[in-house]
Length: 360
Image 1 (cartoon, rainbow, N blue to C red):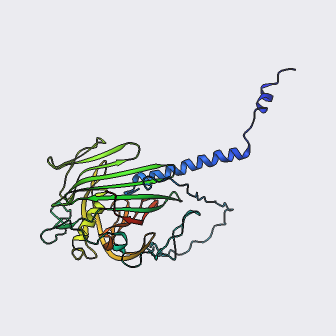
Image 2 (cartoon, rainbow, N blue to C red):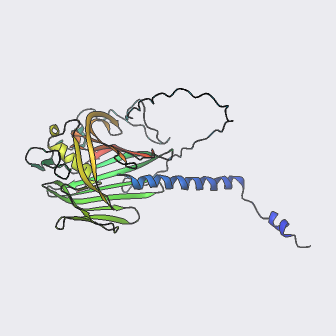
Image 3 (cartoon, one colour):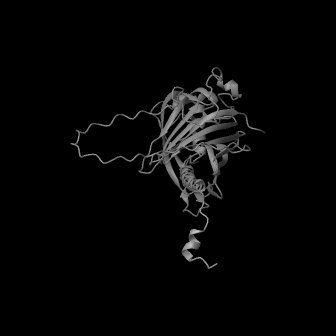
């Protein structure tokens, strides 16, 4: 038998069945989507799963774009002012999307004494009372004149977000520990197929409230910021230039808990409209963050119905994140919700699902 020509040999090569070709295409699209989600995670203040528990597969949401024939030109309509954009509020009448296998949320299990339900008193014995409150110092940062650190607690959250128009789900755990002298806060967040991201803030409780000494942020490798108070500088393992250390400086994790300590000391010192400012340190730089105290709201969370004071960090520059934070008085003003929105519309919403005392 004569050898077949190169063309015939090429045609004789096996071709992947159509269902395998579709599978490869789906895997490629899924990989691109997960990369986009992780980019949002890497830029947010908080973004990991409950420690020691297996990761769950979540449902993928796809969109179909319908192409229509071009329309004939039409006369322009008179310009009208855009409608006011309502502030989204988590409520029972409009629950957030969730995977098909997710359990329904219950909002009536903690209807009475929330503090007693989790064994956390509203006030902590660890307190420092100083002279009357002042809004800001000479450098524009808020002066700490009284603070009350919340009792140690383990908080778990459901995380839902949107990246490039696609929804995703994750889980988070905040382990807050303090003994009256030192503190440690550890936040772990992770999503399916992406692994986890861990932020850790360590420091002391002193005249400035929370006084961080080290902030670490780790995905595959860790980057850290060091608060060198003896030298008056903040240094970075990422080889960024040193930054001057301002009074009351916080890192991106401790700043949330610093707000808790200030409100727990005496919330009447921070009425609606108060602006709180802190030098806030990431793993690469230091900048001033400002939080506006807004009204108290009733939230309907996976944890249950709970009242919380809202604080709002609105963007100051073009690509700043919009950060909304809710602190619950019945849980020692610990954070029960955190929502971060990027300039491109991507967002992540962290909702309290469980609160308990941490293991010794």
